[in-house]
Image (tube, rainbow, N blue to C red):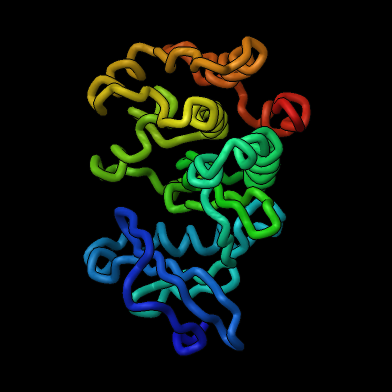
Length: 268
């Protein structure tokens, strides 16, 4: 798309390891979010250029009420950018923190997020960065998956694997143990979704109170966070099922869980 079709604020409202996120206006006044990639980093990194082009191609194929819609993009502009719909209410973590009335919607919204995850898995896409602040809430209170910067096409030879240690630190607490050594897969997305359930109920990140090195060691030996106060045994059993693994084997087939989200998510 021509770069002059979108205007965005000079200052970003959020940033990641490789991109800045701005409020903007697209075409005839539609309010949007614009994700601008680091042009200098891309100019020096051919692999990153290919990965970002792949992210654009991958994201554009999704058309689901529980996945943020990509409206347009350009990988040849400077900086390269993605234009997507606005989900202006909040991310799930901030939404649940507003009041108990908002938090009572937890299972409905987590179930909807699970449907979005099912959608991308059916397109053979691994999200790779599931946590509550990558699940947004629209004004009409639909949960929508976002944060596709670490996503990959399962079994693709050009899989975008995070190698930057600083980038990994931000997602470590939600990652499955085998992701310390290799890229995420369908099953590790389910592990991360289980960590989202823990995050929602405990009002804090998984492994709260531990530093990153202690979290890494727990993952290395196959530990998961303790059952949070307030989590019922039925929900804890769900979390255990979604995180069940043996370090000598692959995680259980996460696609099976995702295709039956309505059965495994309480309140679905």
